[in-house]
Image (cartoon, rainbow, N blue to C red):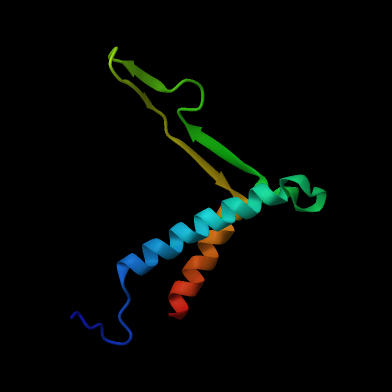
Length: 89
């Protein structure tokens, strides 16, 4: 069994908390999209392969590659909150 001393922090914990903050922040931003006074939470920028993805047709299998990163105010707030929680652990 691997024991961890109190006061040491695990990198996987940080990764999972930040990932949770991004997902929950994005979810809250998409929910706030229809509310007029919370519309600013969904403000952000998309970058990546926005228009047309890379497609490879091999006649047996067709592969489509697309990556899109969407950074919004709510996802940044989610990451900040997750880092705050990590520091308090």
